[in-house]
Amino acid sequence: MNPSPSISISCHWRSLLNRRVLNYLWWVVLGFYLAYGIHEYRVGRLCAYMATDFRGYYASAQIAWQRGFAAVYDLQLQHQYQAALQHRCPASSAPWPPIRVAMPYLPVFVLLFLPWIALDFSTGYLLWTLLTLAGLVLYLWRVNKACAGRLTFLQLLQWALCVPFLSNLFLGQVNLFLTLCTGEMILAYLGGWQRRSGLWLGLLLIKPQVLILLLPGLLVSQSWGAWLGFLASAMAIVALSLLLAGAGGVEAAVRLAAQFSGSLIQTGPVMMNWRALALNLQRVIPAWLAWSAAFTGMGCVTLLVLILWMRQRKASLPGLPYLFLATLVGTLSVTWHSHFYLLMMVLPVLLILDLKQQLPLGLWAAWTLAPPFYYLAAFLAKPDLVDNLLGLGFLALNLVLLGWSARHSTRLQRASPLPVNG
Image (cartoon, rainbow, N blue to C red; front, top):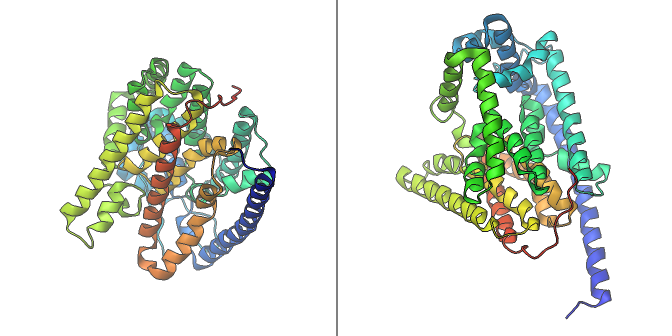
């Protein structure tokens, strides 16, 4: 039985009203971001901690240019170079010392950072930030065009100015590159160009932990074209890395990347994965129980995602965006090293679903509006654990998105295909 016209019109206007209210709330959130930034600047934390990752990229480029690419993975040399990189910032004399970072990327990816050493450190970071902001806006617009969407400029800003992306801007992270590669991989797969999709997939080796469910998923779904493209891309990346740094340099990069799952990184409790849940739970319950719960959760998520990919062999095109969303958020909850700013790479597939009016308004609000309000509540309740609680909040968001997308990926086999223009 079809709903009456009066009921349909009522639901339409209720939806418009709800979106209008949420738009007003978004402006409140934007004001919160600005106020928080001003506060952090005044107390000195903004100048002390901003460009933390960009400092590592900039120092790595200096080292590669002056000492060779293999020397990039010398932690003592990194500390020496990074210590000399200070901002031209009035509050930079605050008591918080800048954080030093390691450089775990393969040598070929260091090429991305070489142009920046033509500028001084502060100017380079400013330009990096502006290009990252402009790059994301332009790329989301490219996704909009590829899906024949009708994205307004306000909607584009609402998607872009989210907590994961703002954290990327603050830290000077490289996740715009990750977002672009993920988006192009998904668009190519939706368009039926599996080998092209695999080529983009290979570029995600800049952060290989994001591939731990994507690659097995493509394998169990027998997506051989995507696998061939990935292997070609991966071999090119390894070959170029060997040319730049030799076998010793590549080995050092791999060894350093492996240390990111161990004692080298002390930020495990603030991540957005099952590991972080265990590290926080073991404060209040026995460690064996906390880790049993975490490993059970990791196993269930992995099994769920692989089952979805096995079903994909019989599924039609409309379920693919849900499948990719489930895989990405499942990966970010399972993988051992997963800070919440990595969620930026999920933006293209969320936007695809929103453009097709397949994303509930509640999930849109959970992405754009909930994190800053949750952060404020966590800060008022437990200021000493606010970063831990923020990470666990994003883990919860990952699991909500996983459950929702997994359910829908199995229900849309009879829907009409998504129009995608390459």
